[in-house]
Image (cartoon, rainbow, N blue to C red; front, side):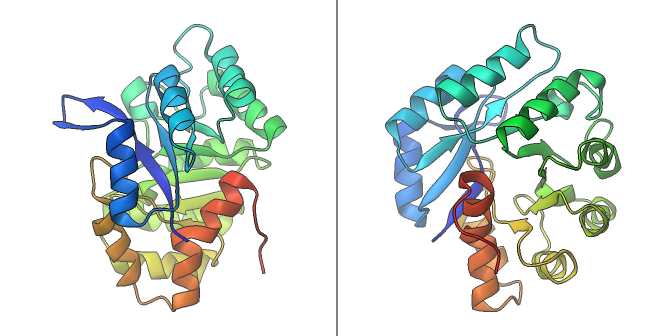
Length: 240
């Protein structure tokens, strides 16, 4: 079972990529993705996509700089069955541990859903800044999207943070070093590393190959590629 823990839907003209409902269905079939979580700043659009694709689940894109952001998150979680919250402090321009984020974290703790945070870029998404949020809310599972992204200093920091913060998970998309996936599993544990593609910005097969080449045994690959995300997002299965 392969569960993509990080996919975008919608149009991204600044990057020259897009992924609509039909494209998502085709891409999941092409890549053998059994399940996926998807998101976009337009949560209403995401709700339409996941209603049409039963294997896809929504995350609420929450921007604490927008009016009504808490109410929108509540509505998406309660009425549309979204499975978590997505924060992008870099694009939306706020510090991860800004007090305005705290109502979202309390909501996530109440609803028992994870929070996925973009990491890897100054000034707002450095791993240490996201750690402040995770430390403030130890009862919320915080996923470091891209686990530091393309900078080795940030990648190492993300792994170090996950070692000392048991509520931190690492997600692999866009992180170029296949060896760091194995290191993360060995140091953090087999249950807190998740495969993600960041589609349509990266191809799922390329991101999958990094896991397959990481040197992990087949059973550990299965956890990273699928069962960890299934347990975290859908609360299905249990740690062994």
